Image (cartoon, rainbow, N blue to C red):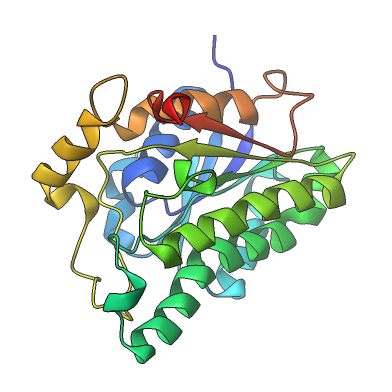
Length: 259
């Protein structure tokens, strides 16, 4: 049984990692998916699907979010689910190791992608989601609830995102649900910002770091991106989570249980 048959879904940050895994899983579940990617070549493997389309752009630009909503509503007549998944990391960059310029620009860039872009996605999609009684889902992190998953800029952005989910759930009620998924350590190529000189880096290039992370997780390993997609399917389905809003569901292999 396909859980998302004919659900119309936008996924940002869809070119790799968790976003790409969400697109694959949602297509398997029968959804009609619009992927927002930064590079055209990131969608080549999806172009064989009749239920797939895409927009190339930067989620930090409101116009990209607006174009995604316009494109999917023109193509499939509406929008049921907006997944604001795009994000950046700070590779544990400590405050005392930053220059004043890195602090200023790094804060702006990380907060823009991890928080402001979610607000723009919600703003651009609200009317369409209200029409369909749909939902906004964002990708958080176990760093929404506890320190240690990054440096102070990343942690600040994820704590802020937790507040965004809670407040939008109140503001968008009763017709639009707002939820999140909080993955723990994941084997994903999430990158950094140019402000912190981290654009060429990705989390999963450092296999030693991932192995070290896995030792602190009760399940004994970091996750694959695909292992988080069950929660997105549940939140996005028409009947899976009808009474769930204002909540971020944690998918961290039990890490939070030890706190």
